[in-house]
Image (cartoon, rainbow, N blue to C red; front, side):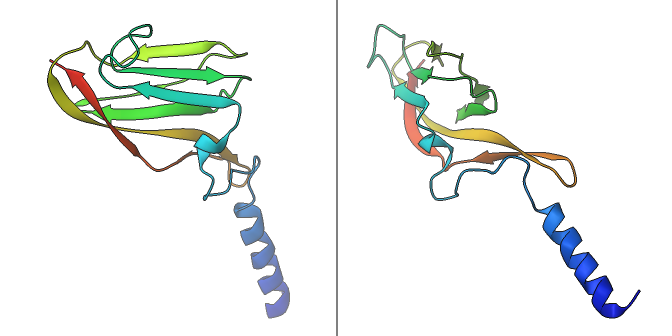
Length: 133
């Protein structure tokens, strides 16, 4: 194989390795720019209807690859919304007077074709507080 043909072949392979199966959203927009998902966090008892320290997530379609990731104190987890306009409500902790920092962000799963690779892509952390005992 000639050197120029080898170079073209390696270039083509490199392009195939970085071509996504599903194109991720632009890095500047972040996963929270998906218009079909609305996220609201209620620190303390700001929204008694949904419970203390609660996330309220409404998804107008079924984004199975989307989830919300959170951390507070030694607790961490992820929340995946329900489909078809249903609202998912998750209360992180009972109400109390102690204040803990909360970090949360939205993420989605990207599937890359070559080599088969599943990778999470997340936005920047947002900071808030959890008021609990």
